[in-house]
Image (cartoon, rainbow, N blue to C red):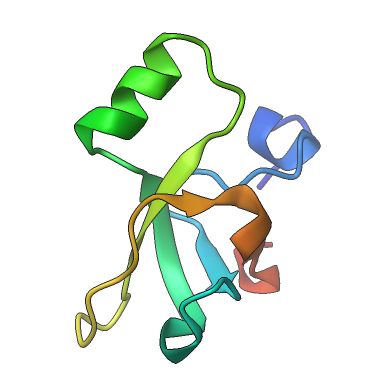
Length: 82
């Protein structure tokens, strides 16, 4: 990501970034692709201005279902993103 990228400047994962999940679902710890959570609840929270963005994680290899409704505190941007 470039230094002028707003996601990088705010240290937020951009859609499609690789992230390391280290949340409460310990059996799912590992590397995932991050997207904004598309569920109705998270979408409504975004629409009313919630500052707590939630994410959906996708297994980049397609082997495991990833967790949904993931808090920002449960993920770290992978250094593989650049």
